[in-house]
Length: 345
Image: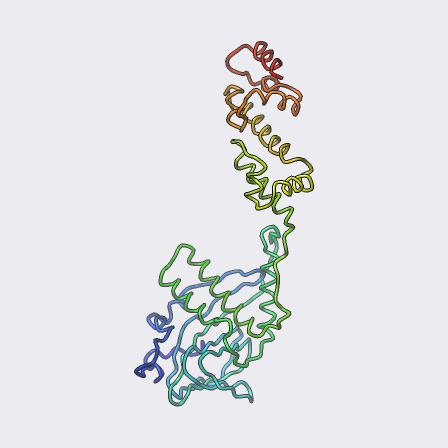
């Protein structure tokens, strides 16, 4: 119960019995308030979440937490022991493996078992709606907002009735504590993910089967086209073949050729050539290297092949392209160099 200070001096009797299996959450007793001391607040989709308390606490046999309520959400997970929950006129037995949520303004009372007492993992947090302007659909923000909203909707209607922790929300408490112990790179993000997992796993236990969400399916032709284009962009400086790229995107060469025609409106070979010629044109204007060296550096094993394809695309030879943009080619005089290129083309 986050409304009471954890009992750190008197553990349940069950914890002291000989022959009992090790308590999985015992390490959290070392610094019971470690996570409580962190000012942990973060955004999840369109929700703002501020963690008030997140800890393991124990209650002595017969201990009573008097009836009280909170304006925030309080999650109670029972990792060991027994007890009783009283909500209004209803009484529910508590035992290992159960959890319940006392949402805003739910009056509740808790009594630990008369003989063995009880442990509780408690998450007490504010959940507020925040301004979601500027969300980027390209990177999945709408999906995250939808899932956060769906989770909150379930929490808002979840009855304060103990349920089985079927999705192992308790494990997320221990994961969060271990993150505090280890202080890994990305500590804040790691803690955020564990807290969100507690919320989601609690909601799943009460969600209707049809409430399961889904990630939009890809257009696989478009996806494979994008993968192939990226591979071409990354490797255009060396000879690459249709068979090689098809193997990388896991389709047949014939299928990849069809994908380029349907998605790119051109043949595979023409796309590769376009990428190379664009880069050659950029280097002609930014470098004083000879045309032959530039051609070799962009996948043209035979530099003589560059001249006709370059002229076909740009309507002029590489040297004329340089001259048009005020770039002087080193070496031979322009007239001689241009004559040499015209012979090759």
